[in-house]
Image 1 (cartoon, rainbow, N blue to C red):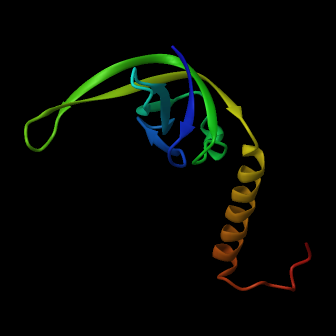
Image 2 (image 1 turned 180 degrees about the vertical axis):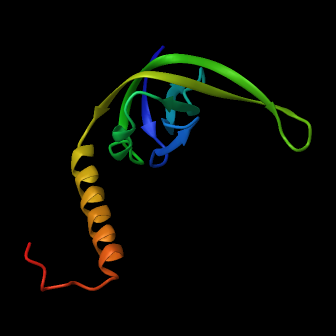
Length: 132
């Protein structure tokens, strides 16, 4: 299935079964339409996505980014605490196509992470006597 939507929150990468990594994110799909009475309506569906190919892509999958997803979509059911059956749309992603300026956001996040790691290594202080 091929669909285009907006990412609802920054993607999360986790390690499963030893060394495999999966990137999880949710895409919102909006449908706008008019009723016979001329009233404008909007419906939103959410698709939980799992991407197994490249965990480095998670940096670019940020909240609000527009993506085109190609993959296998299926409905999964589960029971909530009240015993009521619920359903989710789940996609095993084959390809991701990014739209818009997500590169600038990713660069900002990468620089921020580098700065945080420098502070953590140096104990929050800059050491000026290093030769490099």
